[in-house]
Image (tube, rainbow, N blue to C red; front, side):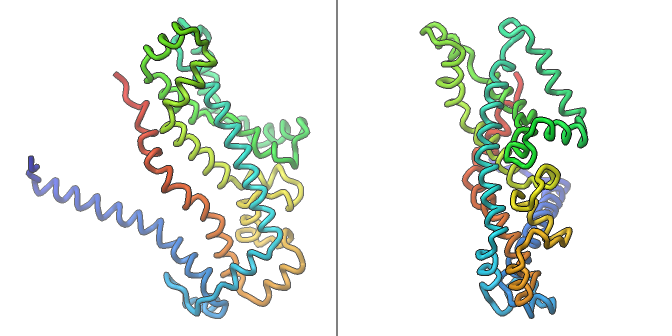
Length: 294
């Protein structure tokens, strides 16, 4: 069946296409400029000749970045943070979402717990109380200071909770009739059936930990413990080169700091750019599933 489009609807579609194209260009063009800048020579970058294509192609900036110990160390801290943080996030999200998905007849204090979690979305404890808690629990300047304060992402819990609610209750009843308990039902029935939603929540947690920079600045006392985004923030935005060794500063005088910053930014974004296309199909279905109520 061919849909007849009225002039008004055609104009609406044309506006949407133009608007979304402009939004896409606004997202892609800065990244292309940074990529071109990272592959250009220092003279071309300093003169402002680089737009969307490398000028006087060179890999010197990437060679310099690869030899920079502080940058490589910050990547190691970030990878450790993502590995531990995402594992903790996913474990707690599943364990919290499962009981909250039950009816009040099965889990009587469900409503109270749900409201407690919702309140944490509306009202934040604030920076100073959070800093004091981290300080007096003796996890300051450790990887746990980056992981534990955000261990329970409430938005992800709500996504998983809605997904669990929409699973057929007959599966749970059949599992109980076969002698399984809640623990077995959760890990052998609910979790295997929730892969799209789990992939979406995993992507949220991974991107959140990878892009986080502010907590690294306030919870880490030494630059050697900075995660990647905190390190880039001190070098690029604050222009604070104290995190760099003297040998790195000497090398930096021989090349352009603009191309080096561009190479660091692109390398910092590259893992997420590589991971996202593989999770994108789960991302769309995971967001939509659980949102429809009968």
